[in-house]
Length: 90
Image 1 (cartoon, rainbow, N blue to C red):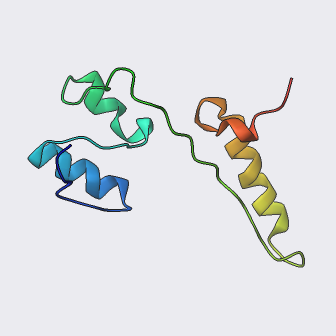
Image 2: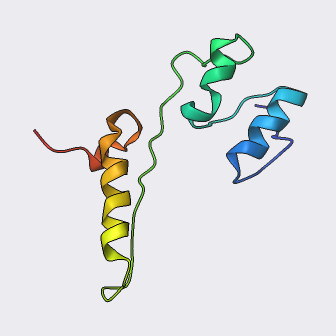
Image 3: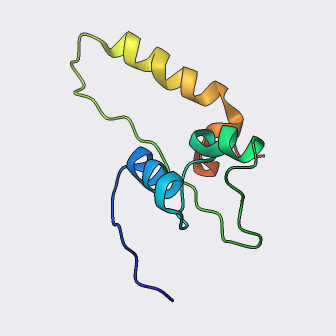
C-alpha cells in the first residue's frame, strides 16, 4: 500500500485535500453524500464500515441540564445518524 501523504483528525480537511489531490479516506457519509450524488466521489465496495459513538458528559449540578438532555434527545431522533450502540435494543 502507498504511504499516506496526509494524516489529519479533521474530516473536512481530509475531504478538501482529497478533492484537490485525490486519494481515499474514511469520512462521515453525511459530509460526503453530496459529492457522491454528483459523481465526484464514490464509495469503495466492500470496505469495512466504521461507526463512532457520541457521548455526553456534564457535571451533575449543571444549571443547563434540561437543555443538555434536550440536545441528547435530538441526537436520538436521527436514527440513521446515531451509532448502533445508542439504538434501543429489541
